[in-house]
Length: 313
Image 1 (tube, rainbow, N blue to C red):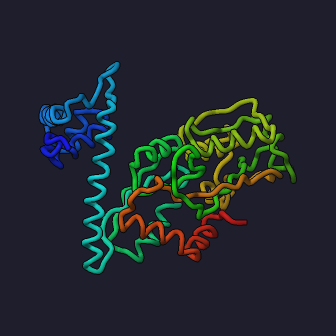
Image 2 (tube, rainbow, N blue to C red):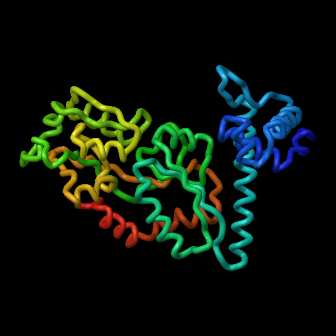
Image 3 (cartoon, rainbow, N blue to C red):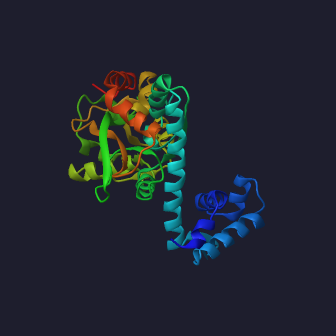
C-alpha cells in the first residue's frame, strides 16, 4: 500500500463524500460547518496524497474523476465497516442499535414508513435514513453500493444483485367519476388511448413498466402529459386533465373518498412486486441484515400491510 494513503484522515473522507453528494464545494462547506476555502484545502490535500485530481469542472458543473469514483467506493466500505462495528458492539451489549440507510422508489414512499415502524417496534433503538428516488436513480445508487438496502420494482438484470419480492404492487387505471369511461362496465386497455394520459418523468419505474405493458398490448395514447410526481398524477386526474395508471396504494384514499374511480380494464391491474435489493456480496450491517430478515420472515405483518393499502384483491 502507498504510504501516502495511510495519511488520509476520516475528516478528509467525510468532506470528500459531502462534495460528491452535493456536487458543490460551497454546499459541502455549509453541510460540514466549514468555510469553502477549508473544504478546498482538504480536497487539495487528498489529491496530493492520491497523486491524481478528484474533480473536473465542465460548464460550471462538478464531475467526479475515475480516481474520485474509486475513492468514493473505498470510503463507503470504510464507513460501512465502522458503522457495522458500532452495531456489533451494541449487539454485544444486548440490543440492536444503529442506523438503517434505505433508498426507495418514489411510489413506495407511502408504504415504507409503515414497514419500518413495524420493524422499529421490535428494535426501538434503530434509526432510519430514508432517500426517495426514481427507478433510474435507484439503479445508479445500486451500482456504487450507496445504501444498505433498496426497495424497488424491476431490479436491473445487468448487475450482480441479491433480491427477493415481498409485496405486491398492482397498477390500475383511474379517472374522475364524471369521466365518460366510468359509465362503462367493461373496458379494454386500448379503449383508454383516445384520452390524455398523465405520466411520470423519464426514469420513473412505474412509467417504464406501463409503457412496456401498453406497447405489448398494442394500446397507444394519442396524448400524454408529463408531470413530476405521483402526487401530481393523482391531482391531475382528479382535476380532469387525463387518465392515470398508478399503483393502487397511491390512490387508496382518493378511491375511498370517491374523488377517483378505478376503471374496469380487462388487462389490469398490471401486477408487479416490491423487492428488497442489495449488490451481491455486499457486507450487510447487523441492522440491515435484521431489517432484511424481518421483511422475509414477518409474513403476517406484510399481509396486514397489503390489506391496509388495498394491494390484494
